[in-house]
Image: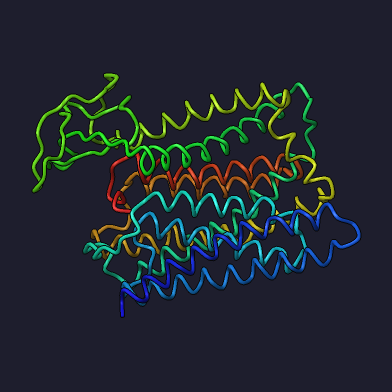
Length: 401
């Protein structure tokens, strides 16, 4: 029965992914079309609603299969984040009828699902620290806040793309282009990882001593630019046995407090992303954000500013509740202390302070419009940095996530 539930959950989320991808077509037509705009808009929204229901079905089926809330590893956490982002879009659309949001929110959700699929989807027994009802309470609250705060970032990005001229020679245009480069880099990271791991089958293994002093194997699916101190290149010969071999390594070594094999992938992604960006710029001969600028033509800047602010007003207290208060209670139960300045805890506090400053500047210093939009996009970058860099590159008590 458990395998049936697990199979159903995987099927549901895969179908939801396809429906969301296809829904972008009628949604785009509804923005461009004048005569049949409403018909295509309704079709797109119904498709998104069906996809969201299937994603919720995935969550329920996987919970039944595992016996616990499916938010215990990177795949499950990212999938939940993606689901909440779609939920945030549907709530935003219900109140503001902002269909242009979908053309930005859905691709981000799809990118998250694609990124999450790069991690293991296997069901593993929970480690002792995760065997608590606070797992569901803490993580679901955090991902819900992420989904709502993401709407603030989407509104901010739409605002900036429409408000900033593509041919303007200014720092704000350069910074917006940098955001687009970051998005392109994430896409190229997924494409490169899938290509090298699943198509080429590139796999170099290195034997090293981790932060706890245990001898473990690090797998590299891209040539080693960065590695661990005193890592030994090995090859699996069967029965959990390895023998020394020669693997490419540039020579940059780091202590095990940094997850070098993950950082290596990030560095390659940046390199490939920048090369891809250079090629695209040579072809189109204009800034990257100019390609999506026509999609924001009908966007109301005042409405985008209002949505961005309201999203933070709702999402920030939820993050404070789930990411700080509930997390501290769980930390006391699991580790006998409310706070320990673990990298994940530290970055949660940084994120909390960022949105505190955001609201202070908005309410007391008049940071509205473009300034507020930049802060909203910056907040989302912090969330992604917490999700990717802190979880995967820096070793800590939350490394199991």
